Image (cartoon, rainbow, N blue to C red; front, side, top):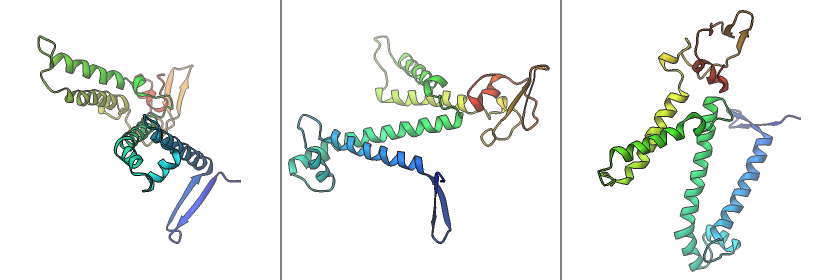
Length: 209
């Protein structure tokens, strides 16, 4: 039995495969997220029945509960949900680019880059009384720039000084071969990697040879 389900649309003009296990897992997690969403919306100083929460979400329910949910609780829960989704997507992109399922911002130094930028911001824009000379609203931007700079140099080995003679490092799967008798290292494309530093070798596997 195939683990993929084939879907064809518009007279076979569009066709795609769906992993049955992945689809089942996604549906289960989606249902679980909705249940947690409803329970969280009804939790607070004023307890609201989950059925009432569902009624409010579909446009019904008492006016008082509708005001509390739509004006106070729902916006915060939606923001929290979107932040969680964004973090998951960012983590997936990062691990996909590094091709290492253990990659994380702190391992690559991205968290440290943000921290250094924050410390630098506080050091350069403070007076003798340790009071900021600019708005604190610029602090997140400084952290973002610090993290972005470190991320760029961490996951972008296609810069000219780090290149290993490939025009693109993102569209090749490398098979590294090591000959212990001669200490020669090459790949399946015939490129000699013996004189290359660890930066060239750890992109594919996240490991430094």
